[in-house]
Amino acid sequence: MHVHAHRLLQARWQPSPNCDARPDPADITLLVIHGISLPPGEFGGAHVDALFGNCLEAAAHPYFAAIQHLRVSAHLFIDRAGTLTQYVCFDRRAWHAGASVFAGRAACNDYSIGVELEGADETPYTAAQYAQLCAVTRALLSAYPGITPERIVGHSDIAPGRKTDPGPAFDWAHFRTLLAAAQE
Image 1 (cartoon, rainbow, N blue to C red):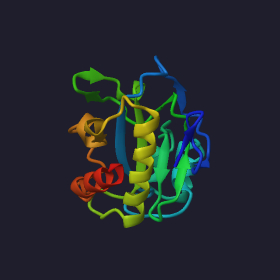
Image 2 (image 1 turned 135 degrees about the horizontal axis):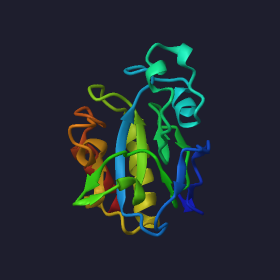
Image 3 (image 1 turned 180 degrees about the horizontal axis):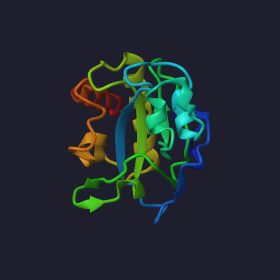
Image 4 (image 1 turned 90 degrees about the horizontal axis):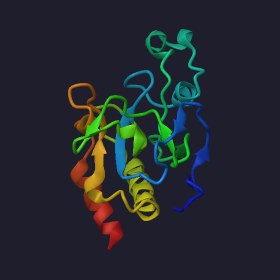
């Protein structure tokens, strides 16, 4: 997996308007892992693309009426099969973390890359997702040396009390073991 011009060459490109310039495009020092399912607890379909593209139809599901107005995105999305989509170039600020703090520094969107995994807090993630996340993480660690294994966190770590994803179903120990094995 390779990053070129702040894009993963292996990812499907689906640009989101929900991004802007980073205060310092060279300051990329945090990786934030999220979990998303639309509607909640359901997988598949193009609803994440629609949400990140500002074209989610409120009539498609009762839950969508409450979130249709949101202007959010992430840099990457990994679906249940491990398929990878990129919405925002890494040197741009994606709107994924919201009000957040890491190691005393606020506004994590300014200096982080956000990766959404298709999932729910209590639903185990798939082997394909862990494999793809590991490959993506290795590419990001190589391209952005300010991100280190110690600077890989969940959304819940930077927005405690407000966010719970990727949730207890995300197996951090398994992910870190896979990542360490891949780096040897």
